[in-house]
Image (cartoon, rainbow, N blue to C red; front, side):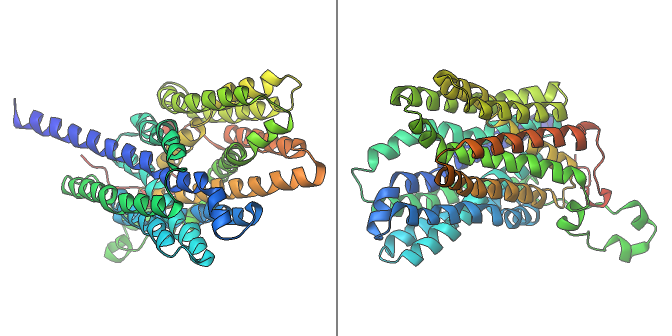
Amino acid sequence: MTSGATSGASSRRLVHGLVAVGFLVMFFSTSVKSVYQVYFADLATHFGRGRADFAWSGSVFMLVTGLVSPLVGALSDRHGPLRTVVIGCLAAGAALAGTSLFDGSLPVFVLGYGLLAAFGLAAMTYVPMGVLVDRLFEQKKSGLAFAVVTNGTSISFIVLSPFWLWLAPKASWEITFLLTGAFLAVPLAGLAWFAAAKAKAAGLDAAPLPLPAEGEKAGGKDAAHAPPPGAWSVLRRDSGFYALAIGFMGCGATMAFIDVHLVAFWQDHSTPRGLMGVSLSLLGVLELISGLLTGWLAIRLPQRALLGAFYLLRSCAVLLLLGASEDLRTLGFAVLFGATYLGTVVLTSMFCLARYGAAIKGRAFGYLFLAHQLGGFASVQLGALSHDLWGSYQPYIVGLAALTALGGLTSWLFLRDPRGEPAPRPALQAHPTA
């Protein structure tokens, strides 16, 4: 075997190893949210609060996760996605361990979980993983690779959720938070640090240098070394960014509906618990399949048409909740929504990472996740408000359907397939690498 072939095989093994590390980080990152969910009632009782009052700690967590996403994107651009993941593991671990050690203070819990753990989760998941996949794979393969990495969360919900439910009656929240925090901050952060070191040695995790714009090439040394414009100054002039953001806001709003209001909606219609369980399981399985299928379809079909179709399908899925048939409101909704579950995330990441230059694509992805989380935060509050004011989720569901349909229309009107679309600012493109 020649040295070139050996080097190529070694490089492929390293890339596959980094993808595996990304998958594992995504797999265990769900613990940050899961421990809060399974101990929610115990936490509210511990701090002497009603559930509605204590639920604001979760709302703060959701909102902050979005607000810090542009910062996480900037860290990924400048210091590398895997080093950003190390910071996230340490922050989330410190937050969970700290709240368990200072368990008598609600302000400490809100600051620790609502702020620090939210930053940690954002720095462990979609934004840095999107940048990592973009640096490891050519554009054609990035969608499928991103789907593989992010399916760590889907498999985690299937595998780890029963474990947390089994553990909750056997261990106090303080012990579970402490041990989970220690795991995130020591072995998981250590694994990410080791992967970052390997990637750096191979030149796979370094932030690429920006190319000078055409006008700067003749401007001499000073022009060539001028700093590129900021991310927001580029994004705010790009109509495609707003199209992606509107769609992704609808994505976040509908996902938050499932997380918070779906079971309550079914209960309002006296849906049998067995049917609810089957529908949720079906939704989880289809979430797993949809990400991989989207990555495969994105190689073969126009991505603009695919993204718009997914949003319109999701709008139709939401409207099924207003149907008279119980099967449509449960199994029909689960099948149609599940078919689009991760598809919108994968395609939005592909558009973003292909559309923007290497110098800002992490921050651009972060701004899109800010829109996603703002949609989720508003969805949680508006769903509760709709039920309190009208005794029904119907006005809220109509609004969700309209928002997701708008996301589909804006995708078709203002986006072009990324394989044929020039970047908004050539000055922000990376030097080509071997």
